[in-house]
Image (tube, rainbow, N blue to C red; front, top):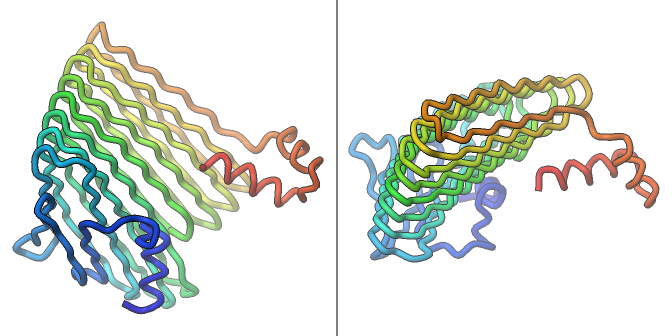
Length: 305
């Protein structure tokens, strides 16, 4: 790997700060590095389109890194990764994609991730997206996440679009059985003419299943964001969906909430707020000696923290 590769990796998973036990690095459509252990295995799919990650039962504090980097302009990379999480295991998965595009053809990564989480298992999934480069070619990322959660399992999903992604369409679908818990925290930053669309479809199928989805975003310049959520309560269950966004310049943000209670004991809540930075917030920080731009940056940093 060269300096560009290392910089992209540091942006999305920062291997210098995180202990690397199990890792698979994909570059320009091919696996270039892999490390496994006796508890977690990674197997390439026969057609080379992705990998299967197997976590054994009762594994405690397993850590898996599966970053993707793209440095080839004009490449469209599609990968299918399946995660098989064993009963009562506890694992953290650090993923994401960084694209460096200095030329004039579009570079695109479409990651399809499927999670099969067995009874009592716990998963923390962290995914970061980042784009850079001086070329006119676009940096495109379209992640699809499909989650199947067994009884009393839990998953926390933290996703962040840091900067430099021209277009993204993120789709997350989940089916929760009895007692399963899904927490999703999404953070998105768009600027210039960038466009970001996110969709969530959560089915609460089992009794006492619960989900909490939080989306925080900032749209600047002429960028566009769209947030869609659909939570369906098919049994006694609870869900809270929250969409908060800061709007600047000539940007546009649309929120399309939908909650559907199909059971009288389903308790579903949706909240959405879109607006510009409050003047009193700016004035308070500027009174401490910050310029208006510095105050805006501080507010946005805290909002997306």
